[in-house]
Amino acid sequence: MAEALARITQVDDLGMIQIRADLARAGDAIAGAAGLAIPDEGRVTSDGTRRLGWMSPDELLLVLPRAELADALAALTDALSTEHALVLDVSDMRAVFRIQGARAVQVLMKLCPTDLAGMPEDGLRRTRAAQAACGIWREPGGYVLIGFRSVGDYLRGLLEGAAVPGSQLDPR
Image (cartoon, rainbow, N blue to C red; front, top):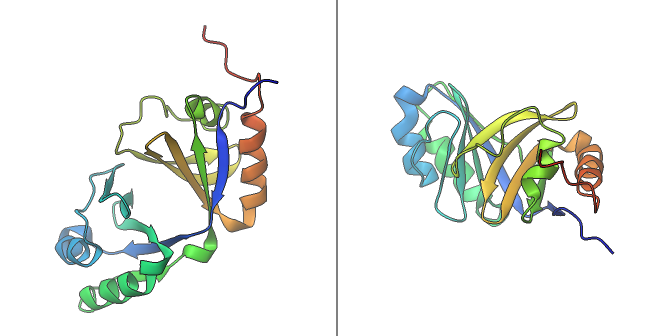
């Protein structure tokens, strides 16, 4: 029996906070409250358990263990209380999948119109998996894909289908 190209698992224990603000003005306050440096464009900063991802010129996404969500939300809200900013728990709006294994990038390359193989270790890409908007970043042994929960079943099916044993891409 052939082995799947990657292991696809849904992750349910992460919290996510969307942060919208003038990053030039509020960057230090966000970094202090999040406990992570502000990432450069298209990058992620991490301490191993938390990730702060650059989503757009005025938007960041903090991904952390769900158990830390309430404290982080309160710290960010307090730190940005004097700024024109949005701090929003978007955890329940998102579906998260881990794509792990030596051929994980092949699974994603079948679905996404972006060069994930060339993505730096600390890179984050906003793209599409088939027709579903998503964000993708690297982690040890593979990738993490986030999308809207409303298309979570669709994303799971796409990922599992792209990982079917024997479906690797032609190396030519």
